[in-house]
View 1 (cartoon, one colour):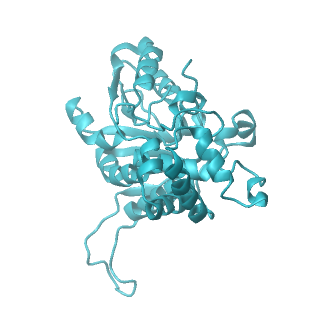
View 2: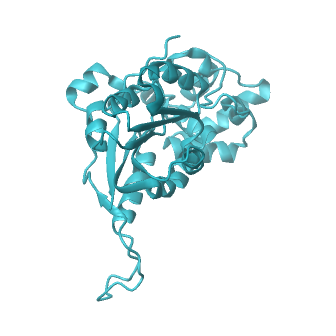
View 3: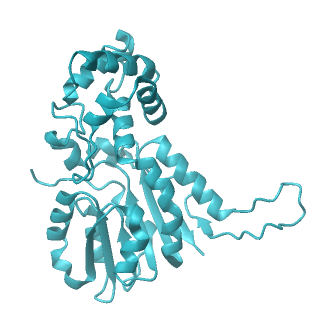
Length: 311
């Protein structure tokens, strides 16, 4: 299948990065290289682009797509959480911009055997890195009821999490749950009819929760942010696109902390903690897709772009 992914908030990201033609830029979620291609177009031969992705198919397709830019590109199969070591290995001390698009790619969703989609029957997989051993099938069939409930409730914000967890455990007592449609059926049967028929697919939140747990998405994001801002040169920008409130909350909170790190009590007349701002939040409110973009690409509807500039 062709690696097809419509880049979300493309123009807004390129503008937000404030690209210098001789700068160094990193895309930590390279995917099909949609954002990357536009970044590379703006770089001169003195510029450098670094693309990171943990999906082997994405690496292959993006390498092919960016081949016309020759020596200015460096493509690395890794997780963006290792950005510090990736840059060290490349002999890069600092960069002028970093981009993260935290959404699942259209290719991953539309390739049935990857098991990301609740709309296509496939083995329960959901691995972003196919070299990883743990799959969604393992989580669904081995996590105890309490842990399943906590995952679905916390990462999916699913109000019927208790019923879903209980019914998953009941179903797997008869035989292992192997496919996406088997899981979808269990989820549907765990909800009252009114909830099943409401707006949005009934399995959306549970699938999101299992995917986040499997790929440690929130943990990776939380643990990577300080390394990313430390990798930025003065004036460098970090642009992050999130797709649900859990991710957005982490990014929003961290950006605010970097801008105002002081931990002194509010009634202190002067700061004595010695913590200094790392820069400024460029986006007081997140940048959202236009009506036109949402119409052309419905998957962009929940996207939010936040930008931080290092001082």
